[in-house]
Image (cartoon, rainbow, N blue to C red):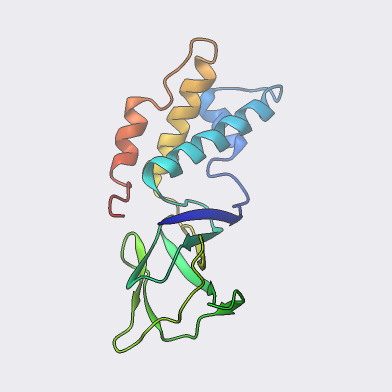
Length: 182
């Protein structure tokens, strides 16, 4: 079993408030906070749907034990920061390099047990193995940017009419970005 924890959230917005206001044809600043909240919510929704991290952030995926293959969600993974584990005595240790081979180009990214390597014994407990990594794009896919614009536009225009979580056009734009393997 594994799950991920956000360690350091991204900073900034995928679509600036100014660009979003141009898209919405808004020429006042009365609702800048609302527009920013919509951008952040639409970004989080798009990232959840696609299982991607658009702006750089630090994540930690936690496993109950070492496996031959450790799958890391929140593509694209740019760098493995550390692999830590709780040893059989209950002390946290850092795994020696070379035990796992990084396959960061694979989606989702993975760590594969290197040939002729074995993993150390861990304490039997939840989250005994923790892989910390940095993920995010240098250039955000244009489909993601447009999906966020369309979603914010829908929410802004129909805020009192219970708009759909994500409009169909946004879903289609994001469908090609979705990471399917887990």
